[in-house]
Amino acid sequence: MADRTADQIQRDIERARASLAVAVDQITYRTNPKRIVENAKKSLAEKAQTPQGKAVIGGVGAFVVVMIVRKLRKH
Image (cartoon, rainbow, N blue to C red; front, side, top):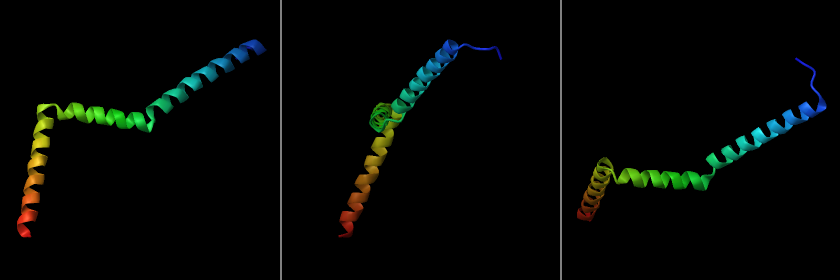
């Protein structure tokens, strides 16, 4: 390894520090609970608008209605 001057070492440290700051910012962004929840809501809303999503929602809705009717008839 070639001998480096103090200025070169300082520049390397500053680049490493800047790179680390970017990495920490990215981790903070990715793991933000509010952002994760908002992304999940958006994803589910988009999936619910597809034909498959509508079929699932309809099927679950029908199942819930059947279960409520059955429970009411038992009383």
